[in-house]
Image 1 (cartoon, rainbow, N blue to C red):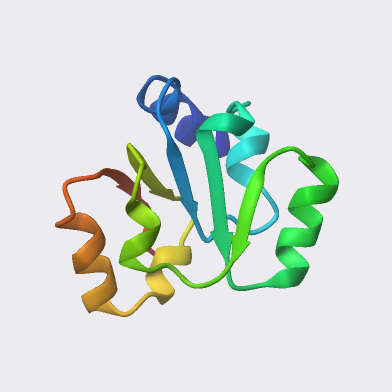
Image 2: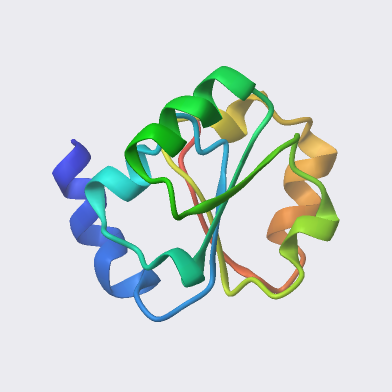
Length: 107
């Protein structure tokens, strides 16, 4: 399943500014070697972000929940393998109606 998602996203993400919503420990970066200048991961868990930085020390992250302000300067918002499922519906609506491209996986 991981590789199927990577194959779908490969062409969609490269060369674009990517916001990884609920980035966790960096699964998206493990699947696709996105350049650090094109990546921002956000996650409310300090522990998850610490593990991401152990693997990808040059990639930028913010410890926070998603907010509409996170979409500034972003081409694509991505949430793989379910984190977006924990967001309130009104917040998800703001993301999908923002005009930013998105790839969201719900569980």
